[in-house]
Amino acid sequence: MDGVLGIPELRRQCSWWKRHSLYSVVGVKEVMFRFAKFDKRTKEVSVYVKDFDYKSRIAEIESAVNHLPSIEDPWECGVDIMGKGHTPVDICPNTAYDSIDGEPYCVAQELRKRTLQREMLEWLPAMIEFYWQNGIESDQVEFLENGNFVRQYEDLAWDRGTDALSPYGRVIYGFQLIEGWHIRSIFCLFIGSLFLSACVVAISTAILHSFEAGLTAGSYALAIAAVTLAGLTFFSAII
Ligand SMILES: [Zn+2]
Image (cartoon, rainbow, N blue to C red; front, side, top):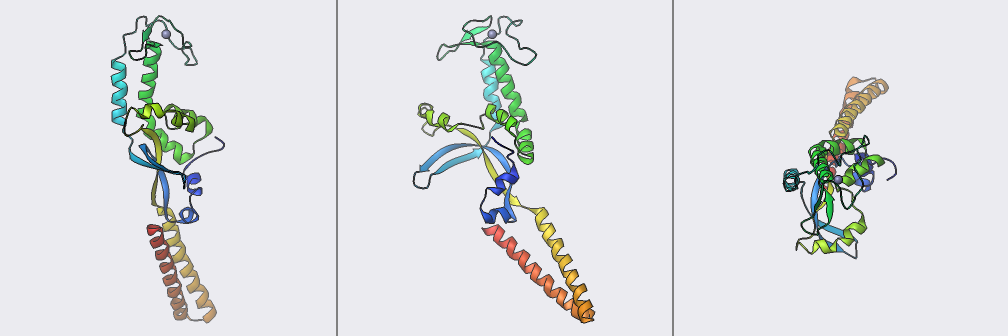
């Protein structure tokens, strides 16, 4: 990924109106979804979306940890100062065999992996909020990849076999844009309208040498500004 990806960049990728609307992208939230249908003509993918279920995910990890065999030799299969464990090998002092495919794996490494996954899920909401608000940089993509939030298209296309296990398809992790009112922009426009009206009053009074005439011109200016702001707010809400 080149550069930074955050809320302002997402807003810039929206349509012209949504880029300037008072009601547009203000945040991102993590969700789980399933593919509903793909329209080949428009290339649009429809999905079913539900909120990200952290509690169930953490419970799944805890269950997987509880079902791991006990570590035979706790003094072996540790990590070095760089946090790296030994390379995958057929046999190590803590080898166990997968109950489904019979593949060998290191219990100590599996336990570390699950513990990290659990820790990551506990911190994920706070970190994702921070990343999106401040911009995701290329070195943070690895974190999102580890959390399965970044998936390659080939990976999803290849996964057809797993889809067949469930009639509803596979659950994918992703992000959903949250729209909201840009309170600061509305406040700035409101203050700008008042300032503009005050300027019209001052200028009109100076030119016409009449405070009453200046006040009338100012009230017209304020009315126009108010109608414009109300119109902008109305169209922001409905489009
Ligand atoms: Zn090992």
